Image (cartoon, rainbow, N blue to C red):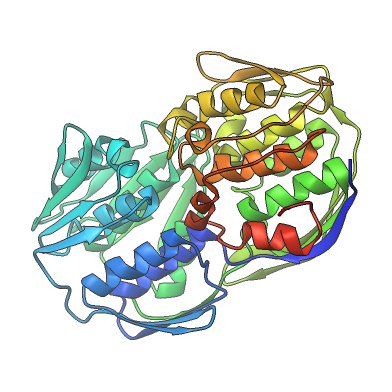
Amino acid sequence: MIRFEGEFSFSGDKSVTQRAILLGGVAQGETVICGAAQGKDAQTALSCISALGAEVKHLGETLVIKGAPRLKSAVSLDCGNSATCMRLLTGLLSGKGIEATLFGDGSLSRRPMARVAEPLTRLGARIETELGKPPIYISPAFLTGGEIALSIPSAQVKSALMLAGLDAKNGVFVVENHPTRDHTERMLPLFGAPVSVTKTEQGKRIFTQKCGLKGTEIDVAGDLSSAAYFMALGALKGRVLCKNVGVNPTRTGIFKAFKKLGVRFSLSNERTVSGEPRADVLVEKSELKAVKITAEEIPLMIDELPLIAILCLFANGESTVSGASELKEKESDRLSGTVRLIRALGGEAEETTDGWRIRGDTRLVGGDVPTALIGGDHRLCMTAAIALLSSEKGGMLSGVNACNVSFPEFFEKLKSAGAGVE
């Protein structure tokens, strides 16, 4: 196995970038976003706010957004492949007094949207879907607000409800019993919107109230989900330093998995910028051991689970993941997709009702990965690349354009580091 070493920087966090774009699009004045993500999902969010009347200027990786003083109505917004964009926009626009239709590509059109539409309707919104799936139709409505307990641990649903609170007469209380990403809680105060968080025995209670937004400046840390692929190569093949990476504690489930697996890693140069923690992360070649990951841990590492599965192939013993049924509702069914990928490359994996069992210390031979096997899913595509680079013989990976959703420079960055990509 060829040794892999290097220092790497990454484009801005996709989740943070999309939130900053959407809020900047409806804020008064200018919002400057430094280090913005470069993938298709960020471009989708920019297209949506432009269609609503915002003005956007591109200055390299810096975006300057002049918020729309009055949102256009009767608009159709193409959310592409981005569930984050669609769900957050649904909450953000539900009390703005406009008509809007939100639609997406074939993958997004299959994803569940009743989980957003139903609680927003209870707050007074007028929202319709096609049997719980996109398109989403928003009509002018008066939001009274109220209290909603999250039925599933979802940062997207939580954020949609919080954003609706900005136009609700009585504000909105969101009750969260399981931790999810808190980027929205951290970002809204930067735009002048107060957020009240009260801890409870079960979790926390988050309150947002009727409030206008004011433009601000946001510096976005490197995307941890993107860096994770390079960290995995460091753990398997050498030594990797990932610089200026976001280490928000509601995103660092991957580090908990690393500890369980026995991955050698450390954080340095820790600081907080624009409300978000960041650090440099060093990962070195490690002797891995089998892990057991359960439902309580899943929300904070949901995007990295397929990658963790690949690491488990090189661990000593049998690893299990349970409580991960939400993987079925992503851009593709990542639960079964991960198992199919592992088997296609010679590894041993078995799908369960809500997770998988993976046998480590077996030969990962390699082999060709056709487009159909990754289903156009950017996470599975990059996971397949790491698996092939770590296998005995490697192989041909098709459908690589899927990476453009979140990490368009993925293969170029691997190639420049001499990872064995042609």
